Image (cartoon, rainbow, N blue to C red; front, side):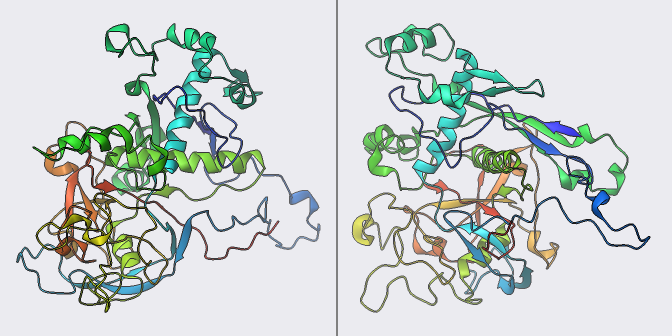
Length: 450
């Protein structure tokens, strides 16, 4: 049995914000996931209960539990669609030629990941690191230290004694970085330790027989959103209030998180997977698939909502309905930003959803996908679940770090809202107009069987 221990390292948050107990009462300072080669380890032996008649009867899995509908997600049924432009390629780039592809079913977040949802991730990392620094841990029977969440729930962040204890660690801003001497957590110390098994690399024929450790990718990711993007993205433009308030203020809880690069979005997906599977393990239930960023093909298929040849999620050909109301949050005309109802971003569930129940697949914020941006990828990728990825290293040239973004944003013109329009951004870049949503591969059934 191989144990992969994703160590969650710390990340700063306002000290007066206390983490609420998330979906479940999480059990570990570092999510512990058991991975056994063929699923044979950790299973209850049921062979002894089979009739001894010399016949083949099979052995049922250890549990009949089926995960119910994931909160906030909708099911996208399998199907075939024409991927690529549904109208003239006005740039004559020919980087997205129309072709027929088939997609298997999957679950997708109905909205972009919001500030409040991403904050749950950030607080979990923060509390895990603080617990380790403060000694709020307990040893498990396997010798691994786990967060004592019951003790963490009693922690008073504004208590002078707690502040004094934290001040003795490297988690608090150094004196020269404080404003009026206020002791605050250092956001740059909020680091999530990511460990991912690269299945695609391991599956290559030339890698057969190599040690499993060669395909485990480890890296540390700073997870706090880059709030300065609101100022950096727009020269000679006053956006300081958004920098100060957008991620931390409750008014923006249900707005899409921005200032998150591709690496941070991937780390969020990995944490969400471990968060769920650790809970399932604690209940002796089978683990589920990984949460992840959608492929470019999955994103486009979901955005079309079953309308294979439509330019927009709501159909053809216009950005307004018959009453003249704009159907998405973007840059209308020559720059009448508030005409669509929002100046910057709007709530993640604003406007009508498409036929699959997905909100803001066009406009509001553009969205990261897992796919590398390569101009000729449509010419060679498979017609079954197309997927072109590249795990770029720090040493790779910038061209290899381009990731496809889709959907257009609040600051884009209508062309980028088309379901077939593709563009890119570098994986280590943060923008005030790029967010993300996740997918997970689960059966369509929402029943809960035991």
